[in-house]
Image (tube, rainbow, N blue to C red; front, side, top):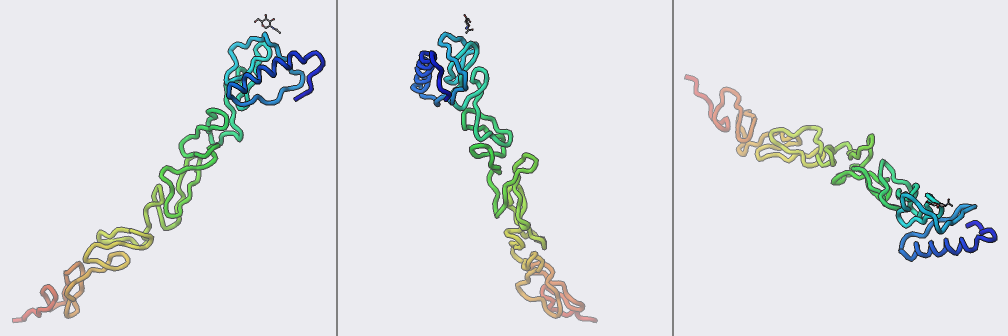
Length: 210
Ligand SMILES: *[C@@H]1O[C@H](CO)[C@@H](O)[C@H](O)[C@H]1NC(C)=O
């Protein structure tokens, strides 16, 4: 604070009383006072000073810490609210969707990013950036580059869960509980394709030529 000049002791006492009132009202202490500051106890401020600001001269408010504007109507936030956040009250930002943290400086992906995905702001929108073997908005879907055939489901990167009767990395191999005989091939669960002249469920019969 600047040292008050001679003769202003009364004014300073008045200001101190005013500030004391402010402080005892429970709000933040006002910030430092500019050089040449004059406090007029009869001053009128229209509109009235808000947020425990003190009317020091006609239409001049001395704002409590954390507020600014002609009538101390605006809260200010330090550090400033980032990413389009709005300062609700000193130090309290309201963040737009996709951002969080005290100053809206953190990107937040709704529901989080799974499986090592990273939440990143892309053109102001929070997005999960997934590792190469995962996809989906939360990186919740595994990728099976080989594909899962015959009703198989990709349950982990490169891993298919196959329905009964199918095996193999892509569920592409049929299982015949009884092996196909005579060079027959298992083409779907328990179904053999036989080489002529064989036939039957397991290609076990030789067709009689008459
Ligand atoms: C402040 O305003 C009042 C009326 O609104 C006036 O009577 C007074 O003289 C003004 N004070 C100063 C210092 O201009």
